[in-house]
Amino acid sequence: SFNFSRECSKESLIRLLILMARRVFEAWKGSNKFLFGGRVIFGPDVWSLPFTLLLIVTPVCFFSVFVATHLRQKLLPNDEGHVILVAGILLTVFVLILLFITSARDPGIVPRNLHPPEEEICYDTTISSDGRQTPTVQIPRTKEVMVYGVTVRVKYCDTCMLYRPPRCSHCSICNNCVERFDHHCPWVGQCIGVRNYRYFFMFVSSATLLCIYLFSMSALYVKVMMDQHQGTVWKAMRESPWAVMLMIYCFISLWFVGGLTGFHLYLITTNQTTYENFRYRSDNRINVYNRGCSNNFLEIFCSKVKPSRNDFRAFIKEESPRNIALATTWERAAEADQANREERRQKVEDELGTDEDIMNLQQSSNVEDGSDSGHQKVDIDIVRIGSNERAPTIQLEARHGNRGTRNNAQEDVKAESLVKESRSYAAAEEGR
Image (cartoon, rainbow, N blue to C red; front, side, top):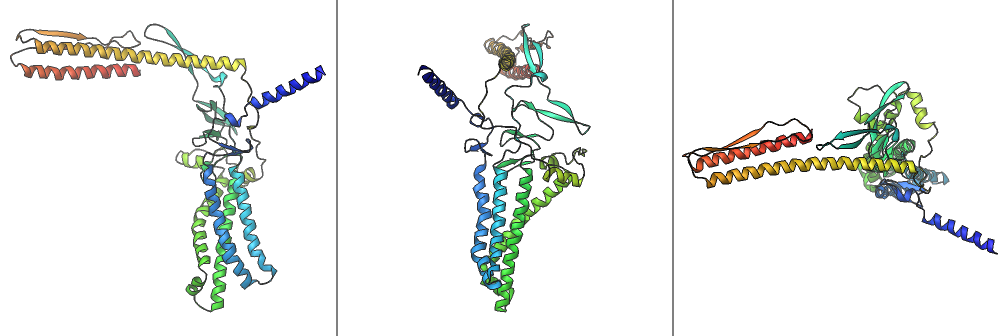
């Protein structure tokens, strides 16, 4: 009985630890929205998805009620007439499924690092004005990798703390680095990347086919009405206003989704992304990823979709002592660098404050002293911060003559200009 109670306590302790542990999606640093316990991932603008659904479902409902039903009765009164309605509904369901897959799928997010890559960190020291050595940490902004035998330069992402793979870019909306980043689509509320680009193109192209189908069936219904009433087109359009409205709606929508389909067909044939096409259009770069039209199509539609690099439902693992030590070193170096900058800024402000005090004393002495002879001379010496080289000495001469307050005003203007000059010089030295 004692062993049984101890086993029960162990099981309860394990269950308690599992409940206390956090999953990856609960501590996700991106802007994504998760549903069903991390099984579904959306973009931050997922609330635009119902609007997209409304744009698709609404015209299909009007088509089913006002066009397809009457067209079936007038054109095909037998059971064959149901094909018109069923075909429209099936095509709509196919479009909605592709929309959901595109929107609720990991687009190819690259897992971010908790710390900068240790093998790429360069440690350096800088000498402050008082002779102290301050450690600094530097990471190369770019590095070169080989792609199909061609050297490609990849950039370092400060947010994700990693070197982006080729064709990867950081989405500012989702706050993630996405492999083969194409664009962020607000209509589906998700980034379009390597894992959902195929479904995005199928969604856009099937939406184009749906627009063509609704437009064609509505035009056919107007034609049937015109033949039955033996009238003109205008009379038939007055008899079927819903069909005319559907034709106008589908015609306008076809310009958008049809144009988008044609543009992405061009991108697929040349193996480009929307991001690459807009950014590198004027650079005349050689596209190392273009392997011919047929191979490019096979790469998009026939290749196996990469598995996700993120397990959003996994429990967060504790950091290793080595990573903790690396993070501590990084934080200490960053704090020391920030403290050094604050110290240099404070010294410049102190120097400028001393200059202003001297100028105020000199101007007050000019007002109080009414003698007509002699002059006072004040030297203001600005020392370059962090260097042994001295800046040029600025000499201020306060002259007193028979001109009285007029000379004093001129000297005040001259003093103010010299103070501004000293400030600009000190600021330039601080920037160096």
